[in-house]
Amino acid sequence: MNKLIKFEFRKIFQQKSFYICMGVAVLLTLLNVVLMKNIASASEEIAFSTMSMTSKAISGSNFIMVMGIFIALYACDDYSNNTMKNIVSKGYKKEHIFLSKYIVSLVVSLVSALVMILLTYVLTISANTGTETFKDILPILIGQLFILIAYHALYFSAGMIIGKVGRSVAFNLVGPTLVVTVLTLITAILKIESLSISDYWIDSAFSNLVIGVSNDVIVKAIVMGIVYSIIFVVAGVLINKKKEA
Amino acid sequence: MCFLLYYLTFDLSNKIYGGDKMEYIVKTNKLTKRFIDKVAVNEVSMNITQGDIYGFIGRNGAGKTTTMKLLLGMIYPTSGSMELFGSKDLEKQRIKIGSLIEAPGIYKNCTAFENMKRFSLISGGSDKEITNLLEFVGLGNVGNKKAGDFSLGMRQRLGIAIAMLGNPELLVLDEPINGLDPAGIKDIRDLILKINKERKVTVLVSSHLLDELSKIVTKYGIVNNGRLVEEITAEELNNRCKEYLSIKVDNLKLAHSLLSKTYSNIEIEIKGEYINIYSHLDKSDEMNKLLVTNNVKVYELAFAKGGLEEYFIERIG
Image (cartoon, rainbow over all chains, first blue to last red; front, side):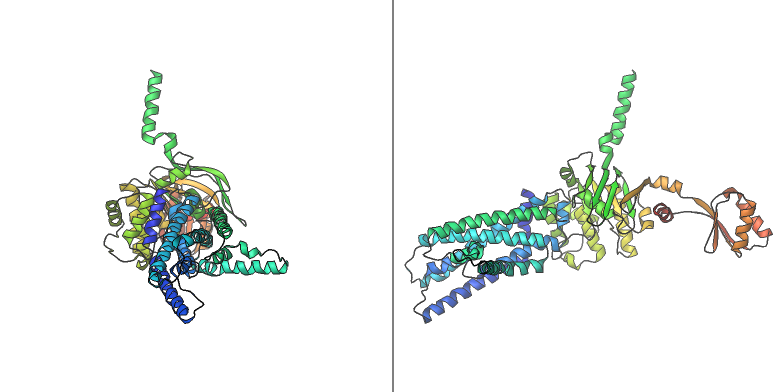
């Protein structure tokens, strides 16, 4: 599997889409900071602090959307170039191919997310007005990273199963939101008042992670991140194994 | 003494053939692949010997590509078994196989060298070997041109170069000359021969262009409706292809009637403007005389031999 991981790292760092997506993510982060700063200066009700902005660096920006596009492009690359058969025919197991791609794209996604957090921190530190410390937002960021891992697993597995760039990008952009809508609809139809099923979906867990949230919510997000990641990866491996190279 | 003689003979035969296990590079036993609506490969038992250029021939949809995909692990068999290089540990053995199935799998936005470099990470091969291989397939001077801008022939050659990474012992090529112009066909044909002769690589190659295939193949596997109809060496095929007498005359009916009445049990048929005779070949001078004396004008009289195409059509019906 080491050979496969080296192969995937070489490909990902030579993929133009990686640099384009990273550029877009940086640009969106910059715009988000500028926008929030302007809104905060116009309204006294909205506080502009380094920690509140840093805590929303991933969840409050379009980073997840950009990641969804990039993962779709990367996961489908070997299918769209018809090169998957070259790898399989060399005797590599399909599950090893899947996992090596998964590991490489996960590492790149997590590093990119950390870069975005750091970038937001650096961009907002000069205009800090808040009283929170980094210690206050650290658990929130950890919870967000676990949810990000679940998003990554979903996007990646979908890409590997679908195998077509256009369809995978469309799925990654619309799919998670569509699930929220469906779950909300089910809750409404079944008239469940005590429980909202959509709270157990990654989208809701992500938006719940804000400054001041209780530890229970953070723990719930971490558990959901782990459980959903396992489900998506196992499903991806099993379905992909049956797929023709 | 007898034991010593037996031992020496056995040892010598092992050295020549590499032992029974190594004799067959590919050996399948009733290999079957069933899809929902059809049986693509039906109990195929094929044997490819070391050093062969094995020509896999059959109509479209006969099961050639599916068989190759089964050998390469791209799809799983429904039943049956196979051995590669005398071993049932297929995944370990597949590293010794290079392949080009259908269109070549290449990264279109990369150069030929970068494509090779990437695949060398999983197949093996140094930068020097990559350069040598690109020279070997005639792509040594393409520079920084992207593979997506290559002609079909260049892509095929790059596909073969990628397949050759890591010094494979078996090369599986599916329709490598499809869509190429005559010069491209000759290039690939010469390249396959060169790989087989110079690098001692066994080749399994499929093609529709039977005449082209017959110029390089040492053994044939004829497939029809998923079944392996026959395995035959090029030498055996050559012997089996019937020699016949072909006569062009002005009156086909009269000639046919005269020859049939004169020679009992004659194997004769009218094919287009010719009468083809498959028996009594030693009587060609008498036949000529018979026709001429009965006022049948003989324009041509020549011996001919059936080719691979005729044999193939005869075998698959």
